Image 1 (cartoon, rainbow, N blue to C red):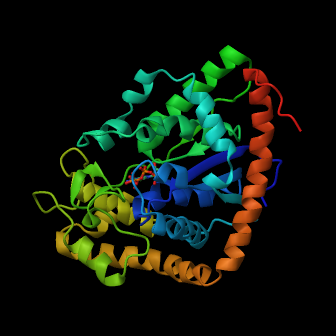
Image 2: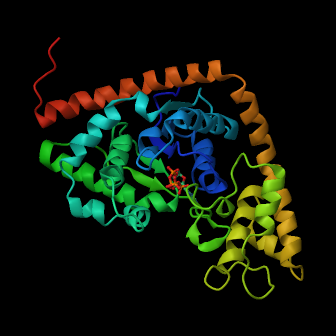
Image 3: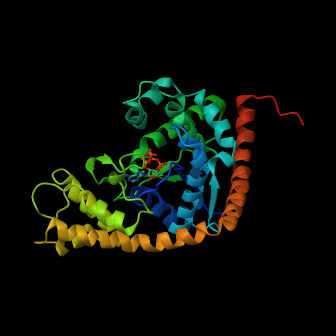
Length: 334
Ligand code: AQP
């Protein structure tokens, strides 16, 4: 279980299946690096996942898959409190309270809400209220830092706004956490459209799943969109596709982009892509092996989640006791 002396960091990933290298580079890789420095709370966001329809027969398995993936990528339950969001009911309780101080306009202007609802005729309230639940996920643990990819920065800004609003209305309660964003790789773009973010809910050719087979990875990289010209050069303005592939190469190989550019002077896109496939396969092989190992040991993983939820509930309940009193709820009767 996580130590208590260090400052707290919190983050989570939705249990919507198929975690991809964008989630890995933008978020999970950071969690693993930060777990020695911070007292980390990392959860699988099943409550967020159901803001778009999920198959009830698959949701539990998807949730566990995400946990196996966390462990396979190197999250260590001795350093990080790993748990499932719905196992800590304080998340929804604080989420509701934060809804009551959130102006509708703040939620309607969120980019993710606009993107996810742009082709929908009947919009569900859960999608709109996603950011208030996310604010609760964070504020319950009073963290100093929240490691996320760039797409979540706007939601984190709202979290800071809600912390300030709550504090000014009910008295000092929450710290304002800061986003921890990777310098490179905070926004991995789709392989089939480098103007869009790589996303698990998009077309399967847009992402490389952490559990994709060797053949799938080779195929997806081979058919990834490239730019006009033939130079392998990092320049997101004129070469968004190659720049994205260079970031993936750099993050998965642990090499500087400049070094990679040098290595491919005079070489073709297809040579570069063939090598990129090898780099990705090499990085994902140990993760996939460990995933299989954890998936065979479900009993131990469930125990990690039981312990994690107990630890998270303890911290969350302490926060909620203060919040309930400040809001003015009548004390619960025994
Ligand atoms: N393309 C990305 N590049 C870098 N970071 C990314 N993240 C997501 N996509 C990228 C980061 O991963 C963490 C978990 O994200 P999430 O699953 O909770 O939600 P999301 O951002 O909505 O991810 P997806 O893949 O786009 O999911 P769907 O399609 O289900 O909505 C976050 O820290 C996120 O920034």
